[in-house]
Length: 317
Image (cartoon, rainbow, N blue to C red; front, side, top):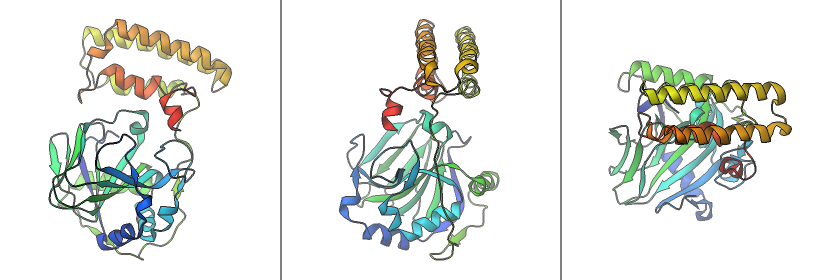
């Protein structure tokens, strides 16, 4: 999610020793290799579609058996007060890296990623938009995933972070607003001891992918991307073509809504506008994070607005 600042530290301190003990108690078989096969990257799924052991990120979410074995992690989720999506323990071996990248997909338009270090060392560095920090055990951090970011473990010990994905919640957004207003060093940090959080039912995502994207959401994503582009002749032509696309989508939305009968017409609109954007060289127009405009638009709208079974997003779901 675009946060407006590269890194945000919440006024929370969790017990790293208790977290480390819960992680150590998990069986070695709980750790899965990175879905992209990045060397030295592995993870334990904690919240997944249907609570199954997978790397999926779409569909109704539920806790896995690994999360049920971690009562303090469950307390942390309750303390932060949010609706939870895909969440994991993420490992980074000594010498391993997460290469520099930007998250521009549909999932990342609305999701925050929270990092709580469990096991770390001074050689672990997290960089986001030219700012680099070392996250200490038990701290609670967020970052702007729409900026270039990367992670390095130059130490001699495996790094393990509790990594929580969420669209937020009333309490969490309050903590974020306080952190952004006060700054990292001015906040009084609250220590959350094990057993101090009253048990409450956790909220899990049940809806995170549209059957067909509404015309209002289509316009929202287009406006979001265009607002970040310099005002040039090329931008004007691209914006005019996308306005035609949104108008046509609105007409189909009024006719079909989310009915499957409208999918062929929706997909024809997508194919037509993609061909026109290629002719208008939308790939040459860059966002401030150096992502080509057409790639961001494809991932935010075209791949998701009327997905079929063969689309990458639908396959992930």
